[in-house]
Image (cartoon, each protein chain N blue to C red):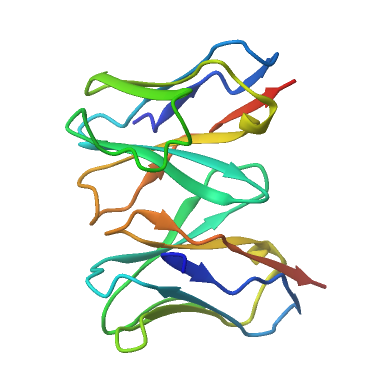
Length: 106
Length: 114
C-alpha cells in the first residue's frame, strides 16, 4: 500500500460547483498535513495547511480525520482559475500523493 | 527574498552522459529535498538533507544517482550515466524544519535524455 493515496481523478466540474478531494495516509503517527496546488508546468505551491480541528480559507476547507486516516479538501463555488492539480502531503513521511487533476469548465 | 533557485532550467543530453543538477535553498532553511516528477509516477521523493546531512536516500533509484550538500546554500544531484528513463522534471525544495513546515519548491529542471 502506498504511504499517501489520493482520489485518482480527473475531476471535471462546471463553474460554481462544489468539489471535494480525499487523501488517505498509512502512518498513524503523522502529525502535519498540507494541500499543495500545482499548475501545468509549474512547481507545487502551498495551498493550505490542515489543522486537527479543520480550517477554512475563503472557498477552501480542509479537514483531518485521524480515526480513518484521511484528509480532505473542499472547494466551494469553483472558479475557472481553480483548474490545477491538487497534491496532499503528509509531512512526517514527506511523501506527496499522486495528485488529483481538477478542470473547471464554463 | 529569492526563493529556491535551480539550474539549469532545461537540460537535453544523450544517453550515457553525466548530468548535474544544482539547487540553492532559501537562506536559513535547514532541510533540503530532491524530488522527481513524471506523469506515470507522480512526485517522488529521492533524498532529503537536514543540516547538510543526508537523512533518507531510500528514494534514490539506483547507484547512478548521487546527491551532495557540501554547505547550507548548495546541493547537487548527479546522474551518471544518464538513461532515457531518467527523463523527468526534477524539483528541489527547502523548508525550515523537515516534517513540520511548508516546503518551498524551486522552478524545477526539465531533463530530457535522448
